[in-house]
Amino acid sequence: MNQRPGTPQAEQEQPVTTTDKRKGTRRQGRTLAFQVLFGLAFDPHFKIDQVSLRRTFADNPAVIDCDSEEAVAFASQLFMGICEHLDSIDKVIGKHSDHWKIGRIGKVELAILRLALFEILHRQDIPLKVAINEAIELAKGFGDENSRAFVNGILDAVARAVDQGRMGGVDKKIDTADKKAITKADSKADAAK
Image 1 (cartoon, rainbow, N blue to C red):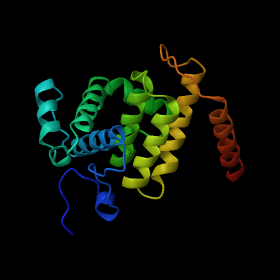
Image 2 (cartoon, rainbow, N blue to C red):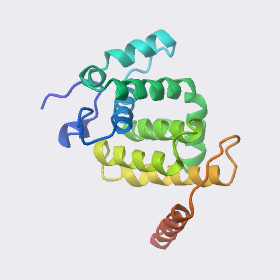
Image 3 (cartoon, rainbow, N blue to C red):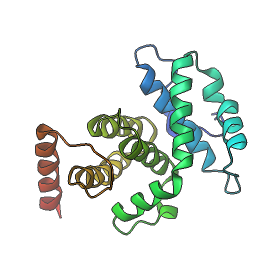
Image 4 (spheres, one colour):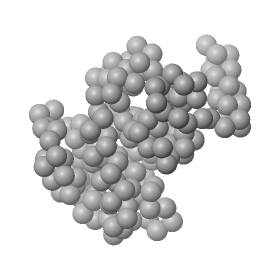
């Protein structure tokens, strides 16, 4: 099987395309941003400067193949924002990942977490629930059978911290139905231990 460099293996097994007309523009953009972030994980010497970032984004095969200018523009905003806030995003991941160092987290899961946390912490126009749900969809499409639970666990912990005002300056709340779902999921996890 031929695989394009910079795209996850799961993409080859379960086709998830950025040109699928059934998906919204923002979902397409998130998928593009994820694919570019994932590709960067394989270049440990990558320089994070504006020119290199823009070139890397524009040269990514998924971006080149995307027909939606709106999706590409949204993906570019996400990608550049993630790179700008990468250190603080990684600190949040480390704080909420229960003994998992950044280097031990799988490349797919790390790219998804970085994307979702940028949306949670730095995009006031994206509700907590949307950021989490979209991250879970990416985990289903690109990750393995454990990805979804891992990503969901970390994002739920961050969402609770945001809701309780412990993430400094992030003014978002979990709605009542979401709080009940999180509490129920936590109870099931505790019972399984």
